[in-house]
Amino acid sequence: MTKKISPEEFFRLRRLVYRNARPLDYAMWKYLFENGSGDDFLRVLSGYQNEDGGFGHNIECNNWNPNSSPYTVCIALDYLDIVEEPAGGAGGSIIAGIMKYLESGVYMLESGWVGMQGIPGNNDYAHMPWFHFDPGKATEADIGVTKRLSDFILRYGEQGSDIYKKAAGLRDRYKDCSQVLLEGYPDYDPEALDIKSYDPDNWASWLPLPVYFVGSPESSYYPECRRTVELNLDTIVDRLVDTGEFQFASPEDLEAYEKSTPHPEGKRWCLPEQTVGNYYWGAHFITRDMNILRRFDRLDFSLPVLN
Picture (cartoon, one colour):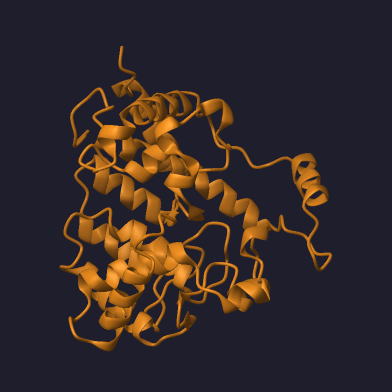
């Protein structure tokens, strides 16, 4: 029997989102499941956009650097892609701003854009270890970020412009590389991970499930990855059913993390901002997972829910 989310579970999860989500994820929930306005959702997203057209301000819950970076623009693109026709209304202004940021060439090398560890300013704000500045990363392109931004430019940019030509060249440069940016993970490689032969017992818990890469039944990857996708969807249903009230990490857990992952400058990772950021993830993950279940017809009720 196919596992699905029941109406009762939907309303229970909705209460968690209503109580705990930041406005961005709340607006996304309303748009996806309750006939909310895509324009309203995009206006909330625009609140994270800077004057230079890039994004910051904790749009990524574990990076509190308010300044723009190529990586945080990619996080914004994940939200932008939620809306079916984002180029109109509030989305048009967002897209124009992103194009302005990318055309500026900031954090862009000949081989592409630097990734999340190539931003010196991250160290000035609360952040988790995977955002800590690494001078070496500032001198090399992040392939996943570069492919994501190049695809955006080729979709929305002006053909013949310098940035369009650059993006076309970068896409050609990395056309044989399967590495992508997925769910914030910078080096997701479906071929190296052999997602067709997915084994839950040997899959790292911190890696995004293959179903997030496949995305929808319309994906060209779906036929050969169907077994993996169905296993992943069952896992997601079980995970959501088991999701309870959100909890802040205990002082003991925070201390254990600090000891197991020492800060290179003797500081602490688990600052109050990170406690809040980790709390925000709870509602984001519920909304993200309900959306993937929606795409694969794993909701046992009709949408939109209007009551």
